[in-house]
Length: 494
Image (cartoon, rainbow, N blue to C red; front, side, top):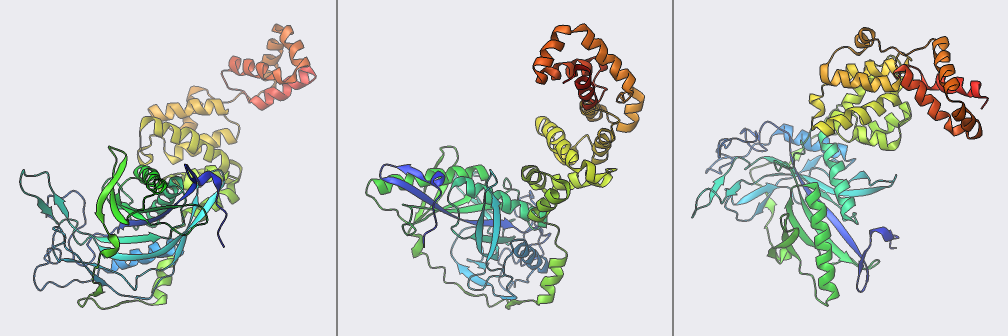
């Protein structure tokens, strides 16, 4: 039975509506100090061929030895994806020629991967979410890199990346728009970063995607897909999908057929172009790697790793909503990066009353701190305002010592000059006026000076806000607006 198609996700064509079908293969570099089958370093940015062992260079007689930490990282990732962990898996040789693949084959996993089916819940805005199925996750080694710009007539080969551990995370074809695909990659990247299994740095190529795109009229079988290789930015993934879907629709509406092929995305031209055709004709001659025994571990080992996992984004988001009354949107903003969530939790830990001020703290972290960090281009790790300082500002507002307006002024002082917020309030005389007699005198003076406004406010009560503003101005923002509001209503008989 065909699922109901959301009309908003359909693409209008000359012959009717079209549905785009998207699946992604994410290549995520495993966070590990050593490579998958050798002890060579994985550090980024070394001189060419600086991090290459005899195993990586495929010297005769060299044998691969599995890196146990890479296996643990793959299991942690599988657990984070709510996926089946296979207690027995095998490594296979995938045979093909590439100048920067010195063995003449890649050690990968084919029939028996380390991780089976899982699922990722993806938020796509307006309270809507989709489930994207995970087909499998397998471990494999990366190839080296060919350098074509070092010499006018020769290409060089850098094997620093050769043998670096990759997790290939294969999704099911469950996405129906470029926005869904971008949201999926964003969520997957967040999960990997929370787990500490991949840093998700797309600029360094530590996370890259092969994007499979096909189109069909709603309700029809899947069309012929094209694979767009090695897309290394979330924005480019969206652009490549939109272009490729339109390209395929144009061909089909002109009476043509789609060739199954591998394509590349050119971000400068905003288009995909053919890389190699007849992908289905490739025969990699997979066979079990004779140098590596089957990979086996126990259920107890998996449980040990599971017990050590951090709280993941979905669980953390649900807790923030339940415990502190945050909106789903605000909670989503806070958990989108582990560093952001950690900062908010550090603020919570320093609050005098988390139950009272948890939501207020979220507002300050998101609106004031994140807003200023974005404006100044500063990473949260380098924030001039610490979690302790921000918690002190929220405390001062929560206990009524300062108003929200004074809080913003205080935030500015702490951002530019530093200091203890509570000490600054004392030394700069920023305390909120709580003496009702003093507040009443200000209210009486402004009411007496503006009889015409008094008449207007009695006729139209919402104009009371003008009086509140005048009192705030007169006090330098040091009075509680609610107290002023209540007093004015009493004085004006509203």
